[in-house]
Length: 179
Image (cartoon, rainbow, N blue to C red):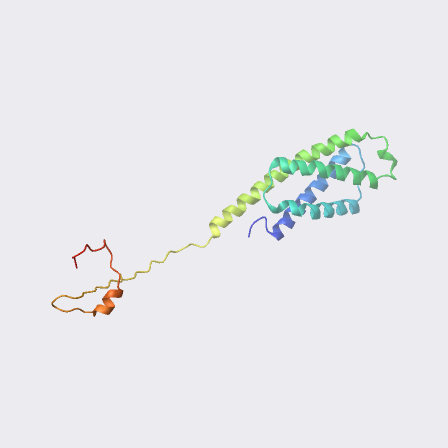
């Protein structure tokens, strides 16, 4: 099992989505915006988790995580603004100020997620080393397969000439006149 199989991809994307969404909501409210309703937070979390599971096919670095977080913060801001349209308290808050806090949330989330990603992959590597089956190499002793072919000559041979003609011999070819 690796952190990139289907179950772990969904888990990693879900954790990413929860942390990113809640820090985005915190950044949005610290920037002067209204804290979104829980239903909006849950919907955005599920949407983000589902869309990010495809990116969890391999280990991601800090800049990759930060880039995705900045893009998601824009989506969060739009969702939070659209759902807060009936509240007059956000009409006076400059969007730039809220976006700065969204950027801070993206940076903080990036640090948390990069550290978590690194820790998770190191943990899986350590578990793989600890739980890998010990490979025992079995040594099988086989006796050498020697075949002695004794042919011709005065004493006769163990094999007749027809069998001896089929047996190949090692070494250089015989010179003319040698037997």
